Amino acid sequence: MIPEDHRRFKLALGQMAVAGGDRVGNLQRAVRMIHAAAEAGAKVMLLPEALDAGWTSPQSRELATSIPDGSTCRIFREAARGCGLYVCAGLTERSGESVYNAAVLISPAGEVLLHHRKLNELEIGHDVYDQGDRLGVVRTPLATFGLMICADGFVRDQIVSRTLGLMGADVILAPSAWAVPPGFDNAATPYGAGWRENFGAVARDYRLWVAGCSNVGRIRGGPWNDHACIGCSLVVDPFGRVALAGPYGEQAETLLTIEIQPEPRPARGTGWNGFWRKSTGAGQ
Image (cartoon, rainbow, N blue to C red; front, top):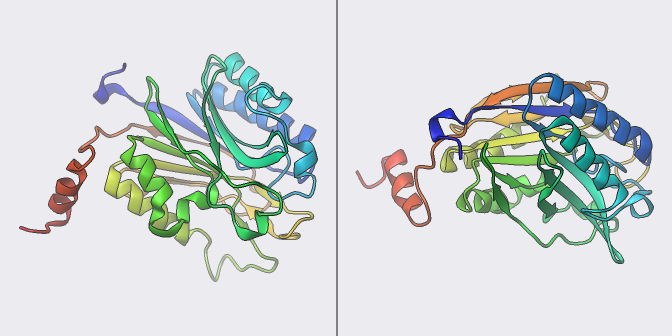
């Protein structure tokens, strides 16, 4: 393993356009983003939620494929192996009769290291996706990564992301699809306060990084028809500060990069209670 004080790597976020139902076009754009990230020196690539079919797309059930050996996942495994970097992507997964809003973290050797199924799906997605059933972290030479998807990050008391912190995550990766309704005025109400608050609280408490990558583009069909996915991809550092913020807009497709250095873990298990008391001054 790399010594704690030398673990530094470049994370790329592919804030890409996703068109509902256009699996071929979406995957082509994602692979181009992966190659661009590798050319930029990134070691880890984070992509959006349900990027193959589009979040809550009416075509989701027919376009879903299996993990790890389905055709969609294989494309990302081959891209990760060909470019020599870790790839995290949100995919629409079929498992028997069930369809999940899923995400994977793939190693530079093309191996699926983590496989997550979204736990906190919005009610409007319940007719499209089945209930998620797993949560995990994986230790790598770069960091211990945890994986969640979009609304998993703002469940009550941030229980999903806090559990990942308790499990040892140095970096939480969150494929996302952040959308606003028609007519939303970003100048009057800048998007993203809720994400900054939820990511920041967990990052501070567990001294970890949280990265959310959202797609861009108009949603066509489904319960949020005509809503716009607007990017605003976000990275928060271990002190709860915004380290990177992507541009806003349904046409704001871009590749973002940032240097990440995981913090040494200050506590474990019940040791967190003493750390939190000390950091807040309670009991002094």
